[in-house]
Length: 168
Image 1 (cartoon, rainbow, N blue to C red):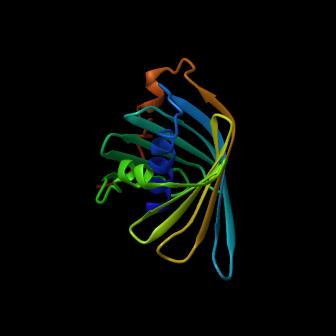
Image 2 (cartoon, rainbow, N blue to C red):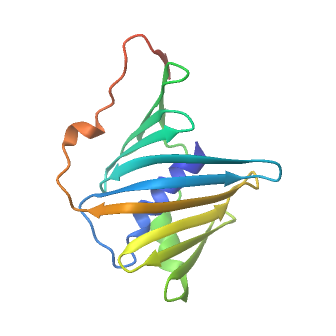
């Protein structure tokens, strides 16, 4: 869960590198590698400054809705919905204020003993990489990016099947 939240917050705050937007959407591939295994997630997301919708297509179908501090995760394979709140939100505004430009495309930032590397390509975030607290190497790559398209606000409203278990 922390991986997903950090990804969202990193991406959202990453736009302080002179990349302004009302909304942003992208397809993504998220690779999580440990010493003995690797798993790749694929999906699409839409974010605004206050809301986000993440749709994972593989390897499992999952939807994540974020509205300020409220999070709803719909796990279709488990037929359950998890309602949560941010327990610990990194102060990424502060992180990126202190981020150091390594070269014309690369920035590095450190927060809570985690080093983030942000790669830019023109006006877009190309990828974000870091090693999490469990020593997993995370690489999130972005493609088919769009900024400031029309977005129906209903996309940020969770569509919860009635028969799913609810976890609070």
